[in-house]
Length: 343
Image (cartoon, rainbow, N blue to C red; front, side, top):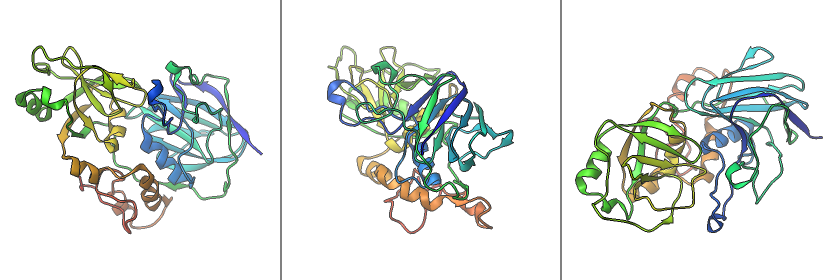
């Protein structure tokens, strides 16, 4: 037996997102998927799903929702004010969602993208192998008041609620960067200035994040032009005005702006969650260090499962909350979770 989530009221920018579409770049279609991919892995760990499932991405604020079938929900990503039938809910946690109960999710306290996941996932129609919304490509649309979203049955609704300690990634911070073939188009003084000074998040959406700073723009050598070539999320393009733009999930597939470097995939959740006014710094890392700092995504879920705990899990909770999830050297098969400060 399946059920639906009834959207009683919808915030301004709700969409169904999963891990996106692989293999369509040659046709001009970006991978897309969740702006904060880590949040879907966190939900899978909390709900004991075998892999990240399609969820509701809440940009800035949520809405009011009711389910026709008892299930478990998980709240991850940018922390938002949430309640179930008027009772406050913890963020970064899973909860029982009885049939008929009304879930209310307000504005984000920090960051931008929050996620409402249910055990087994949202089961809207697949298109090109995914349920991710890419409205610009005609794949899906924003969720509106009155929509009914099909959901899979919860295989274990009696599972106790769980919580997950997370490192703050919603208030700016350090983004680690590898250089690339076009870094050499910028003179050494410009590159040094780029990495030495803080940048301020200006405007952004699912395609990218524009940065600004109160100083001279960053320009490549006079008269140098480049041909358009494939680009990818994490690339830092330098616009014609000399302002950096970090590409995100729904970015175009080719571009002609020079790229001064590329943000590591493990730091893209922090990038996507940067609100206007957030301070960001870039830290250069070698290719060898980048490989060590960037565990394959398939290892994330195993590590997150080990970190999740039932509510009230005992006297070691303070120590557990000092751990960070993604950001240090990790293979995914270690016996112990890695600790904050390993960057």
